[in-house]
Image (cartoon, rainbow, N blue to C red):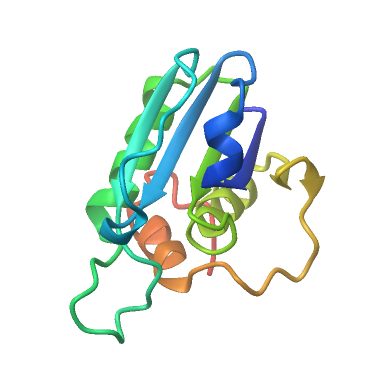
Length: 142
């Protein structure tokens, strides 16, 4: 992976994939029908969990299994040019995944097409913790 970016769902539904890129789609049961994507993505990984830290009852939480699926995707596509991540608003769940991958793999991380403003306060902490726990390289210190 040469870079990672995070986006809102509406933008990704209209996006033509960058060459040799994979998509991580994060959604929850309140998002309506599954998003429709351009067929040229090398692979699309769909993960269902809410944007929560676990304090709200009845919501689906990000789990270790979700994070493991992300690292399995990266292992299947070690030469992909870009990992694109989206969630409903492109601010919290997708940001946590993209920022973690960018930091831990030492590749640029973009918020849509722009450099991420630091510090970035909106990333979902539970998602980051799951990624840290599942990371086979264990290169990121939280």
